[in-house]
Amino acid sequence: MATTRMRGRPPDVGGRDGADPRARSRWALLRPALSAVAVLVVYYALPLDGTSVGTLFALALGLTALAGMLSWQVRAIVRSKRPRLRAIEALATAVPFFLVLFAAVYVGLSRSDPAAFTEALDRTDALYFTVTTFATVGFGDIAPLAKEARIIAMIQMLAGMALLGGGLKLLLGAVRVGLTREPGRRGPR
Image (cartoon, rainbow, N blue to C red; front, side):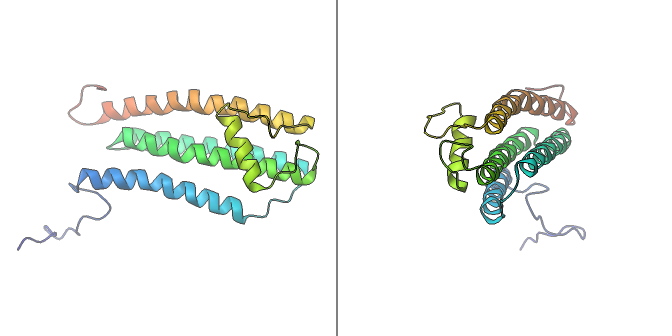
């Protein structure tokens, strides 16, 4: 009977050292899904009552955290043995964080000024507005009325384009570098 231990090494845990590549891929796709669920749970659990100044401060802090997270992810992609999969994880983690960040800002803004939008926004309404704005669908059923709300919506639109355009370029560049760092490879495929 074969054992999983060789020369005092612990058994393979978490998809390392020759584990089934499909199991590693499933785990790599499951992590961002769990991360997105965690972000949503925090979004619905946190108290989001704030002032407009606090809302803008939270937005700046959140965008800084997102930039830091993407920076960390780029380094992880470059060092990863599976940079393509790691890049998918990074994008699948960053986008939900981005959406929930703006939804939280819209909730805070709507609570501090109920006339900021065409209707008062609860968490689900704010998330809906954020996703329709991000997807450039903009049904028009919820629209920003106050200048501050319009400015934040414009920031979301521009930051969304930067996240998708610049973020994808950055992540793909990191994948290219990560693939060239692998031993035995001459360059990206």
